[in-house]
Image (cartoon, rainbow, N blue to C red; front, side):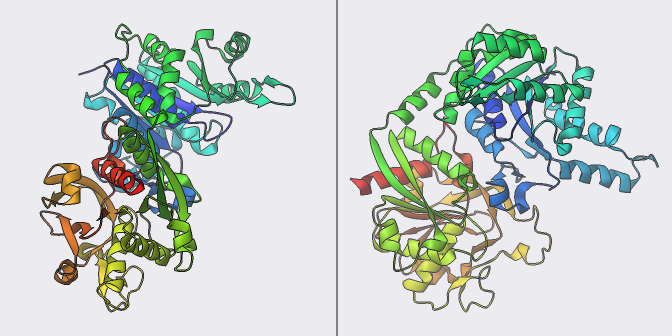
Length: 536
């Protein structure tokens, strides 16, 4: 079995510094050097998972193949590493406490008083080492959510302290990501916030091995020497992380700074094989030097927070780069679309994507946008709720089924063309009970989706409770809307397409979850190509 090494990534000074991107960038460089690497995220909030969190609160809920509802950072991990994550890659405080309390109720602790130390920290350490104990990975990178000093993060920092001592310094190191702000009035970078952040970390018994310093301006050697002196690290262990044009520049920037070599030296691992970043650089070159631009409207209910649709926007980048096309996303709130202004809002677009979501708010705007895309022959992609709204729009405006709706929005609709899945009808708990994870789908040959995938069997990830009502299959197919993808075991409708339209596809699953830098999703590639044709 491999002697797995562990890298912990903590953050200080402020949130949103980009721990996930630094972790993913380091993992990519180590992967390119021939090491097997995975990344996990430890989230300090008490929710069991992000599945019940409002997208405005937390951004996108990312779904893995095995059906885990996880933090959006796992999407970055998959997009950078091009390998799937799992339930074990995301742990929350809620999950930790739930596990410990369940064991206490069973009597596993034999009457002992259950405490944060050792019981909670032992469970955290067990979760951290789950991936390492599989024998699959040379290196496990663990990102600790939150900011050092937060009350919520204290048990995680304590667990890191214990593991560093138990595993030994050659087997576990800590990277501390911090901020070196620039004060315009003084005209200089200030190191004091980083010093205080490191001091707070050290008060918990954890010494950082490497400092990664986010900054708007280059850090001089003098500042690096100062940080090294005050923060108990060597000067070569102070890594500059300048603001990047795109997150996909960060692996290249970290390679130029030598972050991967510093990590490998500290873990006593071979650094002979240089990372080959040819494909990554090719992707970046195409992304930054497009030959065409298309205008695509993303119609959603949470567009004020772009992170709510993070995987979709990244999938556009991947597919756009492969086509050498710049995708200019227009973020359009569905609540602000109506029959009077739809031409003004959507008339200049080359494509329309109606995004996923839950609940009644804003659905009439989505339906209006879909009707406009259908009638004006604008390429259309509907994802999850977007696919369901396409069925409702067609039922209302083409089949003239008055009042057609989803039973999610109207329990008394006379035509529930979208209805609650049978196995969902007796479920009362909302968390973790949807149709989740990867499910098979068979495709009909000679269709848009078959042309995109070039396969008659695919597997895609799902997150929904409601589905196409098969009672309406015959009447809908007889009129021009075709069912072109179904689950081979259950017969659930996965994909619809329109005849007599350049490109009109709705999918019940989430193709965006499987798009990566090196493997752009074929459905997004086909959609963007259709948008370019419309533009032409």
